Image 1 (spheres, protein in one colour):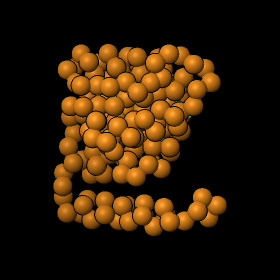
Image 2 (cartoon, rainbow, N blue to C red):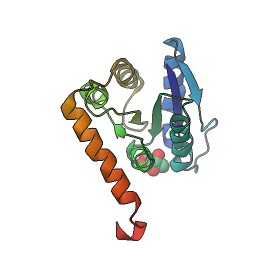
Image 3 (cartoon, rainbow, N blue to C red):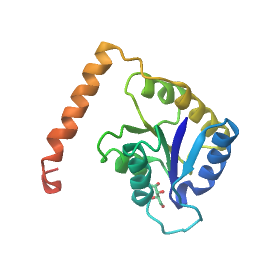
Image 4 (spheres, protein in one colour):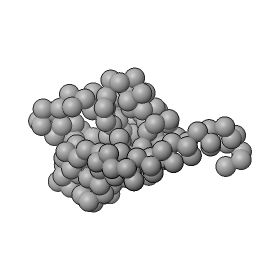
Length: 157
Ligand code: RB5
């Protein structure tokens, strides 16, 4: 599977581990940085690259790692068609794909360890969207929220 991965300084060490795991599992993974540890880099810069890779079809799924997973997920969800969530439990990493068609998994490099990260990534990648009518209906409503709110200015929010 084609996967885009990105991180800031808070996720840098965990990303190095996850990258190795993905390669070991045989995935076609592209690293969108940070390529080196830069203590004051900014997660939205790497979120943008991963989101653009999904928009452009270079990746089917993305993995973003910042310190908590919060900033990366907030930023990623600002991008059209990106459905990102922090999942630090296996149930959510799987069900987020099956029910909500999550296409970006966010992790907190300062929150979880390597073993859990590896299991979360495996659950995320092994899952597939159920396509159930009720989930399609909800996704359609989510997409409408995206359209409606993109016509409002940031100061309205
Ligand atoms: C960076 O220090 C940290 O704020 C960032 O990695 C992330 O945790 C934000 O949510």
